[in-house]
Length: 350
Image (cartoon, rainbow, N blue to C red; front, side):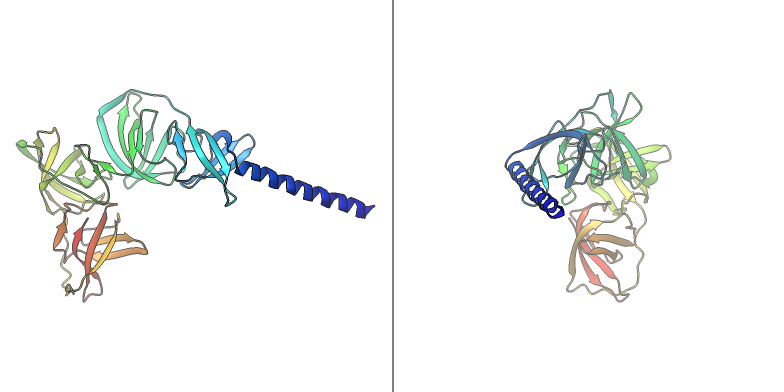
């Protein structure tokens, strides 16, 4: 009797396995649609969706289509069309996100910040980790998300924000690059400076610290009487103040421009102290990386593909095509080896 029961159980298991194989094969050839909310733990490549049936783990591909917004934060309602792939994963064919409400925005308060979206962010509030601390941002369907593929916790972005009539900061636009005042994109691999505005009136001076909103062509300086937003032009003298990492203390002279912006005339801050080392410059080494927040007037900390480089700045002879160094900038550095066993920057370019 036991043998008969065993044979029946084995036969049933084999039959179930065949059925499971048939179901999987059938699903691989057609799309299935599920609805639920984005679950905690979603990444740039894996979307987790909580449904009544359980939690789905779905791969996001370059071909995945988005509609109804690109916000994929915990709690956001989504409808996903998916199919089985050859790699045994579910793959998102399309993702449709739900919407949110609206408020009245005061555009006069608009500014830009950069930082990483924390995993505690929800469907209508972003918690951004910046070098100045945590910033809370709300958003609705009016936010321009054309500059990103999708918004997900753990990724870093640039946020244009402004205050609303409910006293909260709201996202006006979110992107992977900064926007200059003339509408041109200023990415972390290319920078340009102009003298399009006519400067007039009195020259003012302000001493303060650089904030995390600073970007290659606009300096945000926290002075004793408030924050200054100062455009950097081709004629701006930054020779003694090109290090503009958040927290750096600078003194800036500035004037009013015909484009309704304040423009920096000169910028002064800490400068590199001579190390006294002799540097081999006849056959320099070239490295490419991004400027780290640890950078100071004396040393450039460069994040490269295989780690972090520490490069002294006392032998720097030229900033080619650049006026400043800001956190996150992608740059090319020619370096020479010094008698003090340090690498020394010879030139820096974009």
